[in-house]
Each structure stands twice: as C-alpha cells, then as structure tokens.
Amino acid sequence: MTTPAPEFWVRFGPTGCATGSVRTEYVGLLPDDAHKEFTPRIADRRREAAEGWRHELVDKDRWDAEIAPCLYRRCTHAARTPSS
Image (tube, rainbow, N blue to C red):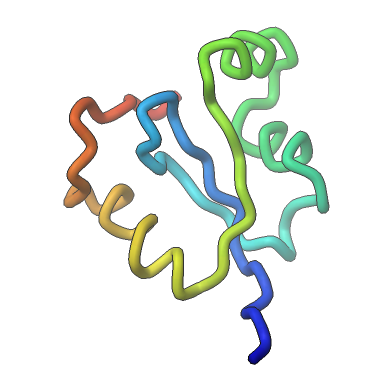
C-alpha cells in the first residue's frame, strides 16, 4: 500500500489547533520554509517557535479529517489558538 504524498503545509498553534494551511507547491521543502510563509519576520518566528508553534506536512486525507475542522472552527480543541 502506498502512502499518499503530502499536499499541504499546516500551521499548528501551541494547543494543537491548526490555524492555517498552504499547498506544498507554493512553499519550500522544509518546516522553516513554511514558517516563513506564515510569519515573515524572523523575530516573530523565533518567538512562535519558543511558544510551541509548528508546521507539518499533511496529506489530503489527514487535512480533511483533522485540519478542516480546525480551519472551519468546528474542532474540539479546549482553547483555540488565535491566528497571528
């Protein structure tokens, strides 16, 4: 069985709630590239990294099941993280 190729970079806040996504073809190959896409200023990226923000590659199935509910404000996270 073949694993689906990741199609999206997803931005997760410290609570684990997804707060944004972008298709992989528009961003580089590293999590740092995705972080730059969402947060252009290096000082802000450093602060976010210390706070627990992260960026992960996900496939379409995971995006539909886990990411979409967060982005459409239907997730079950205890405390939603505001987008920055």
